[in-house]
Length: 213
Image (cartoon, rainbow, N blue to C red; front, side, top):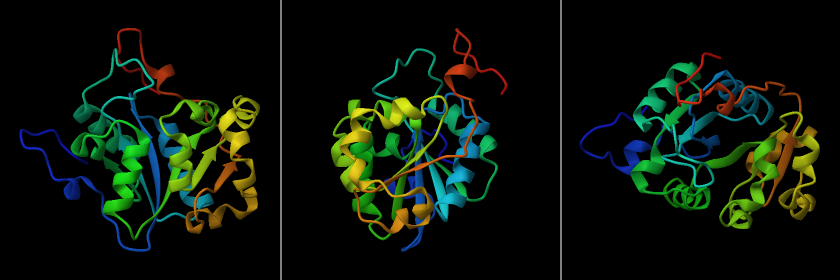
């Protein structure tokens, strides 16, 4: 976990441990607060995609969200470390170190710095539903395979959304999910069977304080 300090750590130190050939899932978000569903999604992806690790990329601030009530990055990172509670899940504040705010820029930097790792971007079905609103979403899809985790009742809305329709021909059958990390992008899979309805929004009080999951 990256701790707040007066001296900014280097980008290399902000990167979790990796080796060439490793299969790593990337779960980006505000984690405000982190909760059990983040861990469950990560463990689900580790198993279904046969990943070696999952990195939680804590954003300094999601460009598509209101930042009112957003806790300090160091506080969110500390809480994420407690919630993750799995040696295969790493917490990173890389975006704050390299100065990126958009997923596309973070992925470009990661591919340059960590060329030997097979990355998979992990998102919930609710994010697929609005993926077409993300900056340079087509570039993201062309740079990294994507695993979409079903989040009922978002399934139909997500699969009927502009991005899903535009990328339909690149979708892998769910029974081939273990191949995703080795596929050349664009490639994506829609994974069912993950039923948690927890969300960070639902765990925040109006004053920004966090509820217990």
